[in-house]
Amino acid sequence: MSLSMYDAAVPGMVRSLKNLDAIIDKAAAYAAGKKVDPTVLMASRLAIDMLPFSTQIHRATETARGGAARLAQMDIPSLPDEDKTVADLRDRLAKVIAFLESVPTETFTGAEDRTVTQKLAGNDMTFPAKQYLFGFVIPNFYFHVTIAFAILRHNGVEIGKADFIRGI
Amino acid sequence: MSLSMYDAAVPGMVRSLKNLDAIIDKAAAYAAGKKVDPTVLMASRLAIDMLPFSTQIHRATETARGGAARLAQMDIPSLPDEDKTVADLRDRLAKVIAFLESVPTETFTGAEDRTVTQKLAGNDMTFPAKQYLFGFVIPNFYFHVTIAFAILRHNGVEIGKADFIRGI
Image (cartoon, rainbow over all chains, first blue to last red; front, side, top):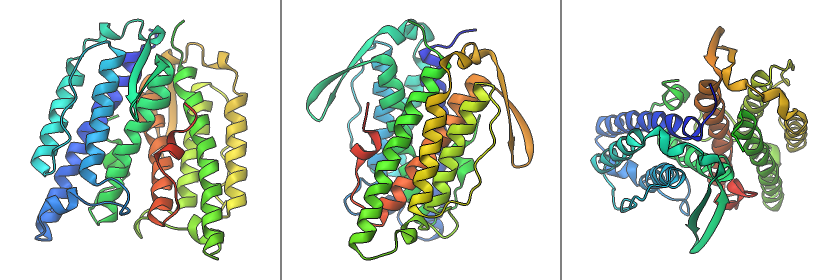
């Protein structure tokens, strides 16, 4: 048994996005219990100059989708960053999970020897694939998922570490 | 060139811990500028029933150190969870970075075929090594680093995503 870039990239992100979907469900129930429009929670931030929950979900999903597609050398359009409601965000998660689950493992064969180019702040940046996955995609992905978690937790949603790490 | 468990585990966590050290430096300067004992910031939380900043650092470093040691089949004692001050926490980070940088890459050869046992909530849990690294160590590590970041950011420390992702 050897280690592939697929093993390193895909299953962990899929599981984490599924956990995020269940966390959004708890957030919606919490808002309903407080008689607050759940869109308020989706628009919450940890600081006024940080991105809101909905954008954290956009970033997490684009990092996962774009990261996997670039490593697999697949061409996929990004999803527009317009989702704001619970239903929109769950639909977005479902699309990205379905995409990740559809990526054939063979597309990652030899991916560790590729380079990956991504536009960052308007400039094309090229990375060796291992650096891209372990130094950029994975840290960014978990950053946005965790900030999303933190926004809800800070607002009182009853979630814990188990909701984040579930499914191993 | 092939992919090793070392590539997947060690360099990303080392870089992230170095970034965390620089972030703590900014936090200490911010507290000093406000004439607040920086230990107050190290004891801050995002919610009263979440762990404080200092414990987020304990968890991140123990996840990194214990995770790498278990995958490499090295026997290391855990560090006591007593650090509370900026100096303590930076010393802890330095020790863990030095340990990670000292782990010989060869100790990870074939690690993808190992199983790893870790005590969780009092029970010995055994995982296939890939699941342990990608489903447990890496998500937990970035979870605690990101919550630490979020605690400081929420308290007004002027840090941004670049401080988190620096060094790729």
